[in-house]
Length: 354
Image (cartoon, rainbow, N blue to C red):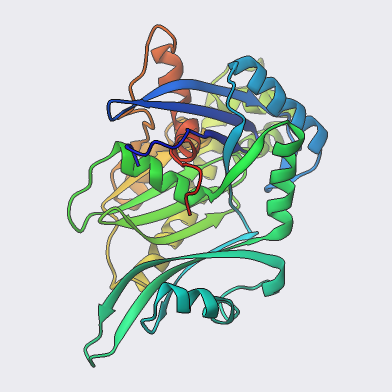
């Protein structure tokens, strides 16, 4: 990853509440942060991954690029949610060429969409010998609905940019993790990214993909619960969620609501972990790396540690990236860093990557 000579791509993470841009450069085998910008989106522009007002999103992308003053136009994007299917499937051993020919027929039984409505890709993870002498091949199958791809590539094109790589959020997280973190042999790590409307869970063993799931729970759930329970405007509720003082609102009342939504999110994560265990010889999760805008909501990391009995660490996507602190304020990077996890993973991609 670090020593490829292809021109860098910009990582462009289009989320439900904000758009993040990351540009990295490479010199002497080290990556350096060149650009990191965030532009927030008004509520309801993107709902559950569906773009409701493409014109406003395009203008926000343009503003972000003008603010960051970058000349690079080629970008890496990612998608997640119900339009994305990621499955690890077991097949008889075959060559990549044979799999290329047969994958469409193999995929039909795993994909809940018309096979003609999706773009597919695959990656052979490993081939193993079975106890009966018959081998098995583990294949990662990825399918994305064509209309979702068209929607996001259209936004980028209209902003005057060139989409070169289209990734999946969970895999961008994996790239970020592998760059910045070491792992112990047999260690099982859960990467949990909680955005505004979608939570991505990617479980790795030995630093390799084993399981992923997207869940429609995110930071907006906290805002909506505070808004409803305390009869506030969306803006006031969002401010209260972030710890701001709202006239007439007791902090204890906000904390109670946060705790309720913490429980909801923790339950969804726990269910995903339990399902993972049923598919992987009942292995336990050793560590959670938490990222996304909701990662730093008060008390959430500690709540997860207590509820799931698993240590939780807030992601630092710049841990192994050189940062000029004269250009990038350390306080800003610490506060906004968890939002950059997917963007950093995308900025690691190169033209021609599969």
